Image (cartoon, one colour):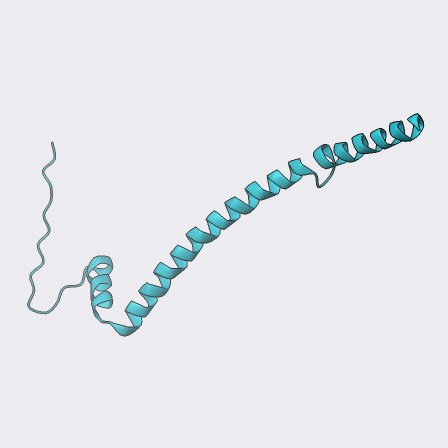
Length: 92
């Protein structure tokens, strides 16, 4: 009977060792959970960026306001009859 109890105790210790420190043990599980969290955060940021791009594309396709704004800001275009004033700050 003592031999059986000793054998079972050794088996329990061996299984616990594999659970805590072995391959695919609790340490690996914790590391994988951290990786999943980082990936989900990254995906969330990318979804927001994609949504902003889709909104901008939709606005450019449907409205002329966005096109006009881009032409003014990026290309420096002015409507007919408008006067463009550039204000230069004073240098100290």
